[in-house]
Length: 309
Length: 280
Ligand SMILES: Nc1ncnc2c1ncn2[C@@H]1O[C@H](COP(=O)(O)OP(=O)(O)OP(=O)(O)O)[C@@H](O)[C@H]1O
Ligand SMILES: [Mg+2]
Image 1: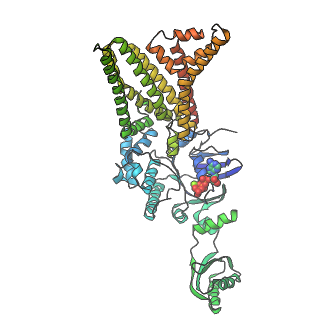
Image 2: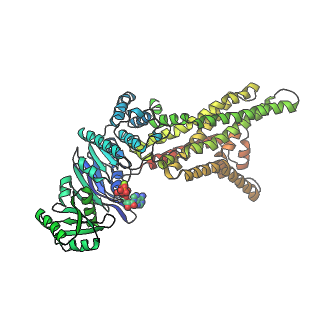
């Protein structure tokens, strides 16, 4: 459905995108992860036919963004990271305008718009001016807008940014519904755990290069065998840190002065871990808590992007 | 025709324009200014001539003044309406979304242009009843007014297209405004000045007047000159005398402004979206 081949974008001598290759099957929900400035928005802008690639090409449903931009536009629903709305326009008129822009007949729009407003829970705001809606509502309205021509592919650039936790959950539910409709969804986000739950595949981009791509579990297993452990203590932290540094199974040890805790990655078995705690107690380290934090995508992300630099 | 009126951008722009009270206040002030001028003029001439009635020559003078007022109005309002058409959308971050819709670039540009022109036409039409006062007193034929309005329309179209063009190729609205007003002032004032300089030099250097197509060209693309030849036919013999080119001003004007319009629309349509397939 989506095929990106050797895509590069140069600004002067700077590569915002460097030889990006990516293939996605129809119906895939793809989470695009990367630090600020990694090139996520650049990739999405090229797919949305808004930015000219320096080299390479991208295909949506077999149509090239270079030579068949018009066809590509009909296939995609694009939600930019930053967008504005027209003032003096009401929510239903906003959707009506874009519907008309896709050549949808007035009769069809009349049926479609209430459905879309219902989908994003904005029915009660249909007669309000869009510029007076809250940020989260605008975001939902923009999502509804990107769906108006029933595109096969959705390109959502940080759709959850600026949303409160409840709205994020709602956004996720909407996206799940859309996934259920068989749409191919590309979504970039900084909020990784949320991506994990709904994405089939994850791509990690750093410095314009795709440095990892696979299913969520594949990406997670890159760090498998390592546990992330936090030890909270009473007393001087330095001594505690030097104690743990001696253990052969421990790596990436970090001190957190404000919490008076150390964190590290642990490679040993569970029995080793038990012994470690016992040894710590014997060393009269005053352990308040010794806990294993679930390696979530956030850590994966930190780990992977660290390696690439 | 249905295609034209179902242009989504046009429909939306008109909706937005008439929803804001600014448009109505604009029309109101424009009409008030026209009324003050016309009634003030009638009052003054009837008072001071002592005759108590209004003579056709005076009616003609008033007609000329009104026409120039309307010309000035078009020249100053058109850039304001069009020079931000695309760039404000860019600044408000609505352009990206608009460009990802399946509308053609021409549809978008055309919608923007026609919505501005439509508003200007409304202004002109709203002023018609005041214009018709002139007919009440005689001295001017309706067909003359028709021709003048036709040229007003062409002028709006050309300046409007230039405004849209600048708005498309320049990122900032303020810069686009300056460029459009600059171009408008060039066309309406600087061209006249150049004409004067060229013909002046011509007579000074040669002693006798030689043929000067360039001077004639600059005179014929000047809207002020054009309106003069339209309200008082025969005044273009003056241009012919000074440049030794016998070509109707209005024909030159029409050709030039049609070309400008076509050129500006062409550039706008080409530059609205990035060229995805350019190879360096
Ligand atoms: N017009 C431009 N001129 C020069 N450099 C640019 C331009 N646009 C983007 N860049 C650079 O390209 C790189 C990629 O930017 P991009 O917006 O794709 O990042 P991103 O992954 O979306 O980041 P974020 O998470 O902050 O949204 C950045 O380093 C940015 O500075
Ligand atoms: Mg971004």
